[in-house]
Length: 443
Image 1 (cartoon, rainbow, N blue to C red):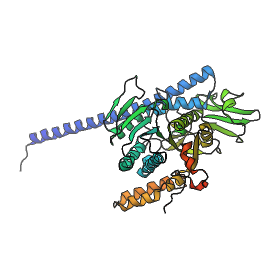
Image 2: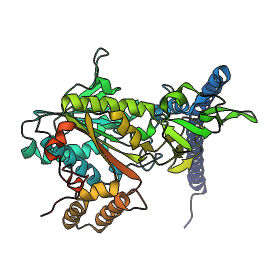
Image 3: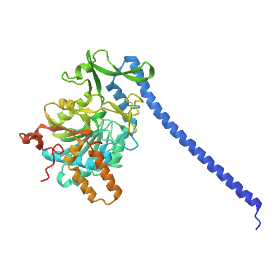
Image 4: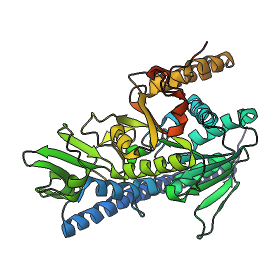
């Protein structure tokens, strides 16, 4: 069979032209990706450079700054602070929290909230207040429990109040908890956003605890206090001296820790004379916040549950950074990594005063087992027949309570109205009637 050479050439030319067009498209796509990646890197570098330059300028002008001031700038600087511009949670962020790991965690905390509301007398109003709600996962799980316990809660006037300074995280929370049922509030209102949850409850966002309405409230603070600015102090031959952040003279574009030559205002006020440690971290902002919670609980009723990395006045140097789920030098790339320090629950206890009662800290493993996590896991496994889902449930359970993982690292601490335990005075210590802080009586 004879073929048309001219037609063949035309087809060949068209194919060649098509290949060239596809090749150019791939080149343009690659260039766009590289440019996008480059722009992202440049934005990150600019953000890092802007805070670092700002800190270096401040230190050059006024001298070394406290660790607390350094943390405040790195985390909440209104232009380039870590919490202001980043999505730091989940697999793609810098850390994963317990509510992100398993629904069981939030469900048990929801049961705890209802248990405390019942034990306190079943107030006709019930405010759920969460400080630093992350992506909203914990609140979402708790609200699901509230829906399942409608018969118990009855006609109680329930509302949700979130204290969040991060614009990005508050947007995630709104989408998680309300879908599109939200709106921005006027500047003359205390809340900056409001809406209706997927379960039909009114929900509000605030930047300060003081703006949350008064009334019977259960406050939750999960991994909130560990991100608050701390002052660091070192015992020396001349007494307590504050650890400061200064410019490294050998590398002027880097920062370093130094010990102040003379006492600072903070070292004179914040250090307890009876402290025997060589190095101490104090979070005065955490003290102020827990005082505010204690005052509200004493006057309005309610309870607070604080869950965090922590200790009872025994640890020393716990200040650290996390980036990409890895430990990160706290003085490198300020604004690009999470900064945290273990919560000193002995300090929080002192700051609550005499008008409230404190329980704990107890380990996360103890608290969750006391709340019945083993029974809840068995129920979920019985109702689940998908092998991968069952494996995920078991893995999540292990992550939450394993002593080598989160089980002993996280502590639970509660602040209660003094009247809450009045009827139980005289009972043995191990029969405390507060869920989670004593073993469940299964009889």
